Length: 631
Ligand code: M6R
Image (cartoon, rainbow, N blue to C red; front, side, top):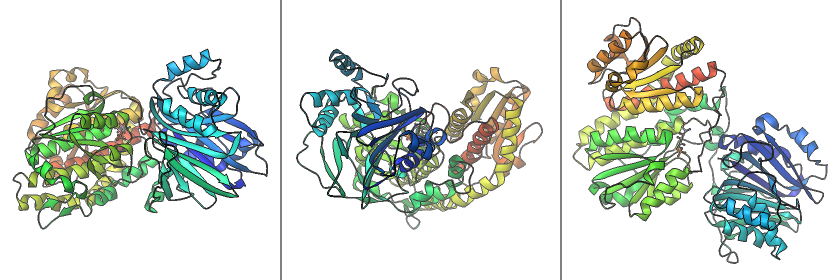
């Protein structure tokens, strides 16, 4: 949610194209409005617009608007917004200024005490030009400078007054060779080059320039400056600013750069759907031992005893990550005979969970590692004495740092706002985790080996599934989209129910149509009322133990005149009367618990092609943001 960038360089040049290109790489974090501020010939200048940088910023035109001359620039900041306080508009787009137009700030996060601060600042004579929470920040800094503080102290004293979350970058025309950063709760790092320091909310924004970064921790600030023709930086904490900190740089591998490019694909989402076989393979790589039939999760190694003796598992997550956890819950209960409670993070934090922290282990699942609801749940759980583990994709993210230990998801950067490859990586980890917990609770080595053996084949079967289903699923999606079908339900039983929920979420996010997902047996208890020849039911029913029961329910849907697509396996297709139904066929598996990893693929593609047929933006669906950092 919102992305910031800032550049400071001792080699003066036009920084506008670099800021715009970095902002484009951050669009997945927010794309309703955008802005840039620079210091040019001693004064702060800004452009801000409604829309995403890709749509509204042409580097040459913006450089001209900002009056960038051949002398070049030393410092610039930029922002992509996902509105939380104040509607998307030009006035509300960052950077925000103080009353004297000498300070410009970009902010990622939410200021909870902004109303009180705004009231106090207005009483002191400050005039506001936006309805954002952010605008209190430059005015508060201005106020502190007026009262005698230096720019740096005013900035840090202001940061200390803020309740909520922030990643901040500040420039001041009175100190044109300085870029100040501060972080609490929102991610912030900066890349280190010989003559340039470049800050951003995420490393992928600036990978084109450097893959060596310093990541700020909560409560830290960085003072980036130019002196004697060189750039340098100092890092400290907001509370103890005189004691400087030495931090290690992190280097990101080249693989991450590939994630930032669409390659031959028409969208990031399409690319990420097709990356799933390799993501699954990478996520399980080196994390199991076929000779012992056990999973080897290095991140949990110090907690073996706790895993062995736990009497309950709790998962906390949101959206797609929660849906992966629902699959994980069924896997753990079935294989390890260990009860699982799947909690939606936004609910967990505020509810009483009658499980003693000594008996339970808690897994927080998150792609971004930034989701406020999940992060706060982890903090609350720790306060209550739970040991917390993470299944997180982004290395070093807030949730990864907040948990006691964890397992990284290895999906790489996921750019498409609708999550696909992160889901598959989370599933892969849950398979391994379930095996691990099961092996500690009576699963034999042979049983473990048998699942691992088939798990190992999943990536190739995923490739086959994508290859054999895509053209048919595209045809069906385009056909139903053109028919104007508006009631779409995803139905299944057992381990397929969470896949129905995920397929429905994906479909909703991309098509903006209302969809439902139900356990198939529930159909007759109400939802069947909406089935007629304008409704489409997508039934997931591979040839498993419940196949006969599912066939019955399928008949019920057909008898009401509904349209039906069945997702089944080769064996299932042979056992169905294919009249009046469309069929998508996935490979047959020995272990029924592994079907989710295959069956989700055509359903992601269905949502994708349906949305494209409706003309929707699949990478940036309306109203959504990739990391939801507000509660
Ligand atoms: O980054 P997280 O996995 O914590 O995000 C959780 C949800 O916000 C996320 O999965 C959301 O539901 C996606 N838009 C799903 O496609």
